[in-house]
Length: 115
Length: 111
Image (cartoon, rainbow over all chains, first blue to last red):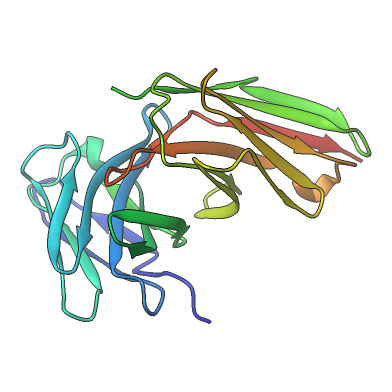
């Protein structure tokens, strides 16, 4: 059974550019969540999508956006990149039964460096 | 607002020792408490999930307990090995909401 796949694994971008990261969840999982991990702030929640709808959103500026497709694959986009956006971006997928999420499985992450 | 803390921040033990990692959360109305392992520069690997109706879960040398009333969870690692060296994170969520992560415990098991 394939795990959560994130692409690309590494990215280097220049300040002011935009970037799109992709996440393919485990087959059958319809919930996809995104997290940002930095040495100073730890793991912080960005947003969660379920059945193509954003269900929850963290406290990040509007430059951070996401979407989910009908096959549950998700993308997140960061526009007008800042140096502080350099981080490991992690995606998690989980099975949802009614309102309840079950065990979350994470991908290997995308390491974004903004120069 | 849920806050999750972990003690200790770092731990160094000789191989073979049994050890306990602690996780505390401020809002006891959680649904899931999940423990993860993270190797440097890698993603998170799920270790154990404890749902709110459960008190503990076991997998191999790992045992995690949950006490919602006191806002605590512990991860017990038996007979530690050098391969257990990693950062251990706990995360708590409420029904329909996202995970809140603790800062992690960095474990080093010395051969």
